[in-house]
Length: 163
Image (cartoon, helix red, strand yellow):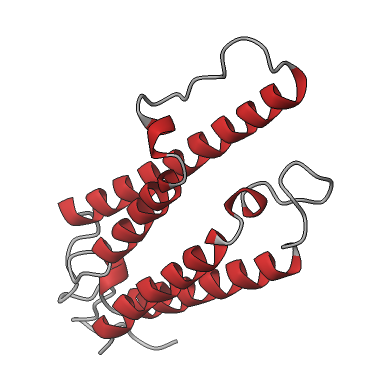
């Protein structure tokens, strides 16, 4: 068995803190974007169920005031917040912005975008609410292409940070 060196270091001294304000802001933006997309999708499914069964009375209200007025722009708000959160995380003060985190962020975003688009093309002919339709992909329709390309664009922001 070999002896331990006196100055052996297990932690990189040039690395920044694990949690910073920027990292917490990026996490908050990603969680808020995911929540926005989920709430809007649930509202769409409530409206679709209401139209199929009742068609009388008032249409279901959205959980967030003003969400109904935005209509399809809700997808841009939700996914935009997710993208901004990922972009804010591509900074040297966050774990994803330094060392191997940049590689993980870059390849992760590229792969998520590619898988999103490929999955959309496989299940594209299934309308929302039909058998075999995927919950979010069928609601987005052709916007799936923009979502996949958006993830790839965020991957390029990580690629610019790679050294």
